[in-house]
Length: 126
Image (cartoon, rainbow, N blue to C red; front, side, top):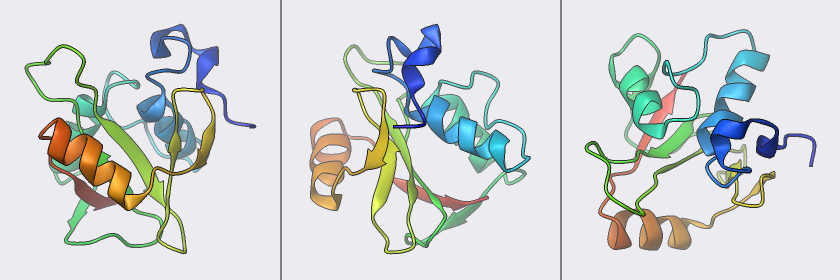
C-alpha cells in the first residue's frame, strides 16, 4: 500500500498506473525513467528494445520486467501491462485499485494480454 499510482492524474486514478509504478521504482534505484511518457507501456517497451536501457531475456528471471505493451496504433479498450518478477518468479505490478501488489498469475496474464488482446509478452533485465 506504500506505492499508490492514483497520486498522478495521468494514471486515471491509478487505473492505468502500471508503467508509472515501475518507473517510480526505476527512479528509486537511481536510473532514468523508461520512456518519455512515464505512464506509457508502449514508450517503456520502445526504450527497452533500443538496447540502451534493457536486455531482452528469453524467460523470466528475478528482478526483470515483464511487459505486454499497449499496441501502436492504440486500439480502443486495449491497454498493455508491465510488472516486475520477484525472486520466487511471481509477478508484482500496479493494479486498477492503484496499489502495487502480487499478481496477476501467469494464467491470467496469458489469457488477458496474449489470448484476449493479442499482445506479445517480453522480459527485460535493466
